Amino acid sequence: MKKTRRNYWLGVGVTWVAFALILGVFTWLAVFPQRERIAEVERSALAGREQFETLSLASSDGWREERESELSELRERVNDFVAEFSDSSHFSFVVSEMARSSQVESLSSKPVVRAVGGVSEEASGGLGEQRLRLSFRCDFEEFVELLNRLERHRPVVFVDQFIVESDERGVGKLEAEMELAVIVKRAGEQQDAG
Image (cartoon, one colour):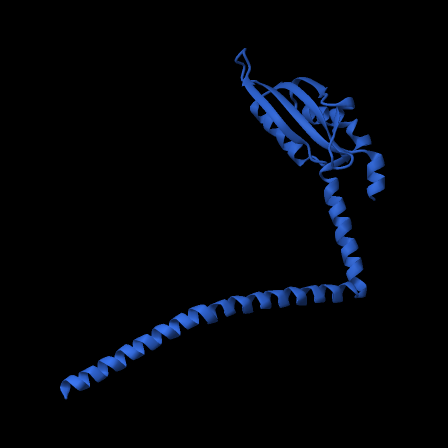
């Protein structure tokens, strides 16, 4: 009788373990993929809801004015980085004035010609760059002041490369050479875009 009872409970235990394994496999094969599908449908529904809300907002009166305001702000921000072609002719003068106000010595500047007129056209429709090579002598503070002025200038002046060496005479001065660049947009292209 004990053996029969023991076999009975052993059979019940094996049945429960088998049932739990079958339930686990079923859950793994059937339920988890459905959860992923449900999450995908929820994401799709959310994207559709957001698109509907955007379109609803677009039909409101203030939405167009807000977008135009944002667009004009973005155009102003672009002006921080891009100079008009007519302004680029003054690039050398402006940089020379910044250098003189920083009290550097033996200043010389010359345009770096990479294409006709010093402006290389990019494929982005009228954007190009104008480059200038600047050579001068100064002490460290004057050099840092000039770099600071260049950094704060609008439109942005990019310091493409610079070389700083100690003066051969050993008087505490530095000899520096910089290649500067500014992004330019020709005036005709500027009017077409606006």
